[in-house]
Amino acid sequence: MQRRGKVGECKLCRQQAKLHCSHIIPEFCYKSIYRSKHQLTEVRVSPQGLNRRISQKGYKEPMLCSSCEQKMNIWETAFHDFWYSTIVPSGPVTQKYPVIDGFDYKWMKLFHLSVIWRLHSAEGFGRIDLGSYAEQIRDMLLRENAGLANNLPVFGCLLLDDTNKIMDMLITEPGMGRWDNSYFYSVSYAGCEWLFLMVNEPTKKQKEVIDAFGIQVNGSMRLMTAHYKRSRSWDKLVREIRSAIKGRSI
Ligand SMILES: [Zn+2]
Image 1: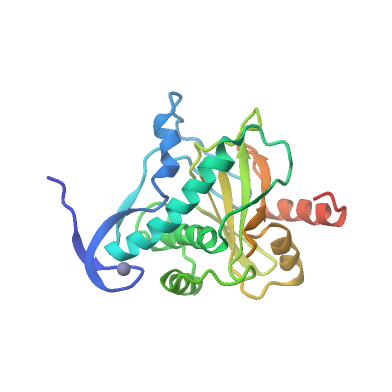
Image 2: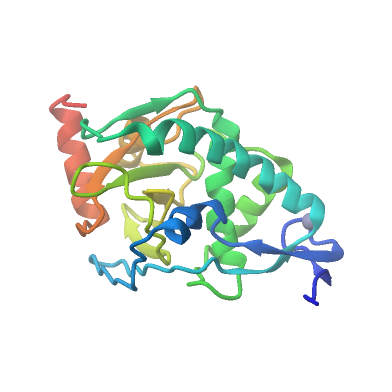
């Protein structure tokens, strides 16, 4: 019989409770990998400053009480239903910076912040340290408050295969970098590399990028695109974005 329901402190609400074994990266992100006939062996790509790895097994550990687990499930389900019904199956991506819309700002932002927070809180799976931002994110998740677009902005870069279709069989360990005096973290799941900038009062440069690519409160965001094997550092990406903004090509 499986050992379930270990009692401990829930990492989100900090109450003593029976803890659920929570996936750090949501289980649905692994489904296409499980289903694939061409299972990926471990591949390492090492862009400057980032360390990535493909993992085939869903990692989980006891972390949340049942009420916090349910709360996160609501955001996960909302993201899954939107992303896998409209974005992933949409066929070849022809635009360099496609705009997506029609989602709810709150669950989109809280879902992604919950992933990066779980990566911080997990004992295993390529742990990262969010420093003082971990407590801010915990508070946002607990209060279900996604904040403004400038608060801990999240960006996405779709990962495309040779036919420009979204490649959703890549899950990476998180990487970390620094841009314009702020830390950012990067982790790939659900066919996209998600970038988390740890800032609440962005600089002018950061604000430009947030306005162009951050999750917007009206339920839209502009995504970047890249071949999944191509390494790109944040600096290169930002230069590209800034020249695109200046040239009004986006
Ligand atoms: Zn809890």
